[in-house]
Amino acid sequence: MENLVFVINCGSSSIKFQLIEPNSQQIHLKGLAENLDSDRCRIKSGDQEINLPNQNYDGVLKEILRLITPFEDKVCAIGHRVVHGGEYFYSSMIIDDEVLSKIKKCAHLAPLHNPVNAKGIEALLKRFPKILNVAVFDTAFHMSMPNHAYLYALPIKFYKENQIRRYGFHGTSHRFISEQATKLLPDHSKLIIAHLGNGSSVCAVKDGKSVDTSMGFTPLEGLVMGTRSGDLDPSILTYLSKELNISAEEALTICNSKSGLLGISEISSDMRLLEEKAIQKDPQAMLAIEMFCYRLAKYIASYTVPLKGCDGLIFTGGIGENSHFIRSKVINYLPNFSIDEKIHEKLKRGASGIISSLSSPHIAVIPTNEELMIAQDALKLKAAI
Ligand code: ADP
Image 1 (cartoon, rainbow, N blue to C red):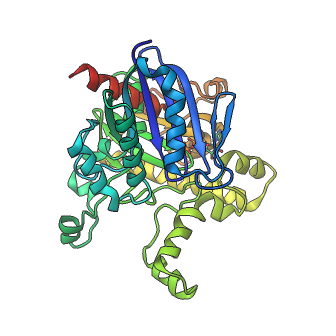
Image 2: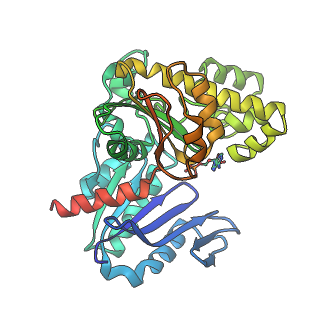
């Protein structure tokens, strides 16, 4: 067990961490720190619950580092999830001063995430100066998109001078799934991956490379999500801000945090709960689900354009992996795709499997594992030194 990788995901108000042995995929420690900076701040790891009322980011990080101290001699690398790599990073990187400085330079593109990602990196570099630290970027996988896919039809100077373009997110998950798909669907070169969780995105993958994806300059673009509206006419923002006498920032918060499944259903952003309400014929839950599935099906159909066809559609993420109901509803919108209901019924929750009735395009479910992908990248970069 010398090849442990410590994977850390420093979010805006939570920190997730895992100690993984990437080859055996064994997890030695797993935890979540949540409600940072509040009286409910705590770390949960296995049976342990450590209450840290009103503890700030630095204090919580210190406590997490204390938890991994017993494993210190066995940790060969540390993998950091970093949200935004801008146009600097096309793959995972060993962190040195230059890489860290570029991560900080991307802070204007992801102000809630990159500064805390950098904070986590600095804390770990300081505490474990001899262990290799690796950054794995959410955006890197999508750097292979062609310019006609990643540019907005705005004056081009806004791309050249202000870096406004589509970056895409969930790249680590889409890359993991496209690699796993080579085992389940060998010789399938035109894949559409639907990552459906609290945040959701679709990605068109040609020969293992992302050629288009639904999230854009920020994760707001694209699908209907838990609390995000997805695609909108941007005029709505100025209209809302005038009508409600609120700032543009406040109007944007409505689109990010109060919309999507939550905004339409006025019940919850949680798909499981909405499915229960839909079964009881709650009209707003039914509408929210219909909008979610309809938008997703439109995106899937449109990705046959960059792929010039499609030979595999893969569902992943909490909803994609677990919900028969949503998968069936989405497929019902798509004339060229068909599910074998008997196989579909039999597929266990959280398991991989092909569920299509046609030999092409295949439809499959593959559970994602971003932490494992980060650990594998860290180990690969360590081995290459
Ligand atoms: P995140 O994007 O935060 O990683 P997840 O990938 O864990 O989120 O997905 C969370 C979503 O998955 C929630 O909407 C949850 O209700 C949904 N989900 C989980 N299990 C099921 C299920 N059995 N049926 C329907 N939805 C589910």
